[in-house]
Structure formats: structure tokens, C-alpha cells
Length: 444
Ligand SMILES: *Cc1c(COP(=O)(O)O)cnc(C)c1O
Image (cartoon, rainbow, N blue to C red; front, side):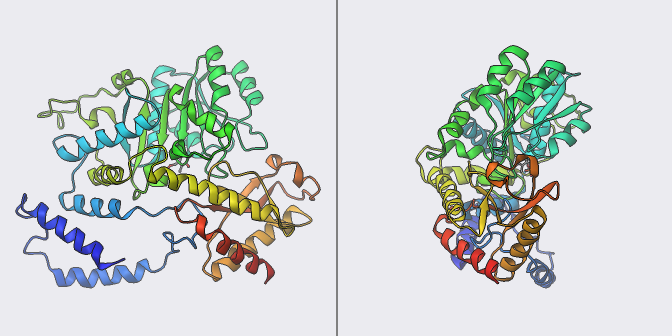
């Protein structure tokens, strides 16, 4: 971090302070004690992987942009609560504007939506509304969908069924039809960008089935949503993104690909009429707000207004425009994944799993059996970490492995592969360096 960042924050704080008398520390705060405690915090925090670095090419972690960090910090001095207009006057308006821009990215002029603590809460809200409409019917999601859908269904008292996937890690339409023919389905969760492999379910075909079976479609794009702006996806993938506006609800996580700190998910409904299901009477919160406030259309009560401020500020700098700077960054992530996958494909020492649809690459060192491959994956994971290059592991289900894995001895039910989320905007320039690191770890 540069001092300039802190100078900018200080300047902004000083300006904000002209509107509020006691914005910074109250005079009775013991700042020496604060400094001492913070020093202890530094020691504790040093035990971390460098998530913000391009050498971190493992789990789904992307650093918040500087503007998000500073806007969040600035708002934190006021600490607004976006539950209600009373508690977060300015930041509630900023939230509504930010959410409208996200809805607009998917082609929704009209919508009902708001920010949430994260994707899990946002998905819960979508499935909860689904339950209000189809109280006794089942929720279905693919076997590669996020694990929380099953748990959320349990919390909501809804039946849940897993739909099998094809060899691209996408929901299998024959399997879905089989379930639709035997089970009353209220909501089909369509994942656009699975967390494991970045696979994109066939939304277009699910929309066709919806015409016959009349279920709700919830798109879980917590991770993949911002790829709506990419210009270099495959024709299949692009086409699924083009039809998102036909779904009933959608989740996208600004804290995944949207340059935000954690604590920022987003739920959107196509039909604003679903607002009726949120109605409640709390004697505490409704006194002075004439306008409909966010607490009236949200399952959560208190939420960080600072998250909305950070998102709003980030979108001022990086509007969600096709071919804009942010969109170029998203496209580069896909390019980085394709590039790494290409290097892996051309190397006999390694084996690819599937063509990256978004920016996740899954692969493994070649070997005679699944157990030997799994062992070698673990070794590479440890060796690269020692060199300061951080990958992730995934236990890939054997029945989803493509044909070029057929000759390998299937001596266990899964195979441990390596997984890289190349979701930093400058990962593309580092692919060769990452590959060199992997190769040298393998050869040791
Ligand atoms: C990350 C993720 C979630 C869960 O979101 P959180 O923000 O971690 O609660 C749900 N679905 C998908 C597809 C995800 O990638």
C-alpha cells in the first residue's frame, strides 16, 4: 500500500468531518492503547496466504479495488445501517442505485432487489420466495451446484433433489426431465458458473422445459454473474447469459467478481410483485420512513451500509458497460484461464479436465491411476505453496470425467485435481510465470 492511499482517505475524512462534529475518535479514546492492540493484530494477520497477489491462483479470492476499500473505510466512520432509511439515509439510496445498475446489466429495467450479506443469504431469499409461491414443491439443483442450496432447502422445510451433470459439469437435461416427470418441482436452480469448475448450465433448455412444467427459474450467478459483460466466451456460454432476463430471480456476488470486500451479495427478482411476501409489522422500524425502505424487502435486518457505499463508488469508476474497462478485465480472466488450459493440454506430464467456460481451470498431473494422480496433485499443491505459488485442490467426481481420462485406472470414486481461479485482472500477464512454477514443482 502506498501512503497516497491514506492521504486520500484523510482528505475525504476531513471533508466529511465538516458535516459531523464528532466523526473521528472521541476525545476519551485511549489512542496509545489502540496502537498497541493494532500492533498485535498485525502479528496475527501475517499468518495468511497472499490472496491479493497474482501468485495466489487458487480459491475464488479477488482483492477489493482501492476505491472500494477507501469508500468502505470512509463510510465506516458513519457506520450506516441499510436496514432502513432512518439508519442509513444516504447509503440506502446508493444501494438502490447500485442494485438498479446491476439489474440493468442483465436487461431488467423493472426489478425488485437489494444487497445481502453474501450469496448464501441471497439464494435463501430466492428459494424462500419460491416457497411462498409453491409451498409444497421441490427445489432442484445440479450435483455441481453450490452445496448451500440443499442446506437452504432444509432450513426452509423444502424437499430438495440433485440433478446429475453431463461431462461438461452442466445440469443434464434428460436427468432434469426425468425428475420433472415424477416430482412436483417449484424452483429449478440454474447455476451460471459453478464454484468448482465454472460450468454454465443450459438455461435456454431449462426455459423450454419451464413452458411445459411451470416451475420458477432461479439463476445462481453468485460467482459467474459479471461474465455477462465478457465478449470472448464460447457461443454456447454467451447464449445462456443472453437469456438471463427471462429467469425469475438471480443472485450475483459483488464480493466475488465485483471488486468488493466480503459482505456484499445481491438478489434480484424480475417481478417486483414478490415484494408482497416480505410484508411484516415491526413496531420498531417504520415510524419516519415514508418511502418503501430496504428493510421491507429483505430477509436480513441490519446490514452494512458501507458495503453499498463501496459498491456504488466502484461502479462510478467502473460502470458495468460492455467493452468498458471492467468488462475488459472480466474478459481477460477468461483469456487467462484458456491460456493456462492450453499450456496444460500441450504438455504430456499433465491432463486437462474440461475447457474453461469462465475463469476456472481444473487439471491434474498425468498418472496411471486415480490414486496416483490424487497423490501427485497433493504434492504439487504443497510444493508450489513452498515456492510462494498458491493453487487449490478439488475432488472431482469420477463419473464426470471426460473420455480422454478413460485409460486411467479408476481405483477410487473421485480424483483429486488442481484448481485455479484466475480471477485477478492481471492474471493474464502472469500465466506463463504460474505455469513455470507448476512445472518446476512437478519436476522436484
Ligand atoms: C460463492 C457461491 C455461493 C455462496 O455465496 P457466498 O457469498 O459465499 O455466501 C453460492 N453459489 C455459487 C455458485 C457460488 O459461487
